[in-house]
Length: 109
Length: 109
DNA sequence: TGTATATAACGTAATATTGCAATATATTAA
DNA sequence: TTAATATATTGCAATATTACGTTATATACA
Image (tube, rainbow over all chains, first blue to last red; front, side, top):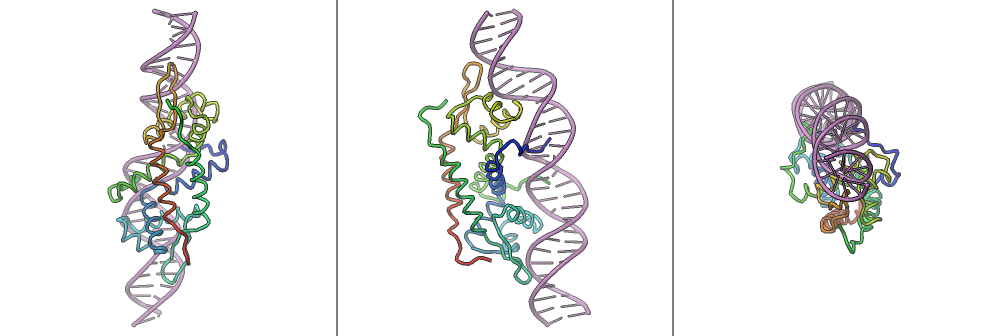
């Protein structure tokens, strides 16, 4: 059906999957890496930096904003984007505890 | 076009996005959490544990296997699945360095 | 007021994902 | 060999994603 059965999973599992999904595209990885390096940037910077159309970049920014990973403030003609520190912290905690949950295995199959 | 322009991104960005994509579904998060807890399991265990059809679980397992996050060994009638320690280590390194790359911002927008 | 600039929103085409029933495959036990 | 068990594969329908041209909106400046 193309429709994820969210109701059978926990809120934590759904939230983690949602955050990871927002990160799971090379363009959005690149956008976030640029934001980490530059601290702030505007849509036009990313259009130049990556090789994608303005409409596409804008859409990716929207997705990142929707899950709260970035925030944008209108600054004159443009919109200044930056990482949302609180969501990023949550991401760090959730992802780290998920990945670190695996402590290797004595024996495997 | 619905087709990601992988060629304009670095191999690292594509690989990270690929790994994250494999994790970006609550069913696959649940499968991995179960695997972490139980160390090993078979497809049937997951069908009981989660509320999804056998074909659906099998498909999610295939995706996790395709990116190398898990491995399966035929054991009589069933297939014993477990986490692939090497890929998991790579995942840990890549994801950690990506997320930890952000050191908060003095001022944001 | 008019014009340039920057971004968002809309519409569309191509492709990918999700979930499952049905079927195929492969191993074990009788 | 036959039956039972466990998975994988195939095919399908519904939905989601990706990318971009075009258009709308909103601010700044002459």
